[in-house]
Image (cartoon, rainbow, N blue to C red; front, side, top):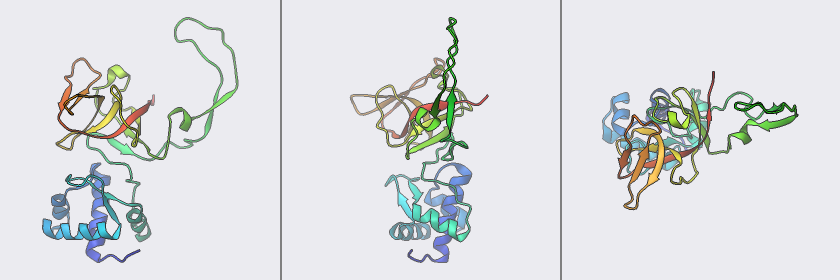
Length: 228
């Protein structure tokens, strides 16, 4: 591990703290304000952290593209920092977590089927289903807690958790986590257009679609979790 200066440690820690507190990576200006130094100084420290492998720039040219690498998170953990797993993008407008529910991989008994419409014969069986298989959990899977009612006609309500695959390529009609040009995040149905733009369609007839010339897709929704 290449050694860091005291100021580089401060920058690395501030990035992690900002992500944890605000749900997204800081800009260079925000880092400067947090550490009471100018933007040029912060830029120099960030470049050093990038070269040493403690940071990576997930979106070159974007103001919020900085992310801790595994090396950076390990270094902060060993130094005693309370580091959360920020390999998943933290998004404004959502509460994000990579922490899966307890016993996520525990198989649950499937004891039969029950009618929600016409009655069916009750046949008790004994099968097991792993939650990870049911929700297509992979290494690139993370959860987002939904805020708002733009997707209620897809049975996604405020307070639900959506299961998102970060590396899955979106297809027309998929529900995606989209980052707009103003760096806000939204959950919408994805419809690419011939001119390269995208229509982000809410599943709520009271809301208008978003016609975006350019977006970044941070994942495709593969499941929904609701707690009662």
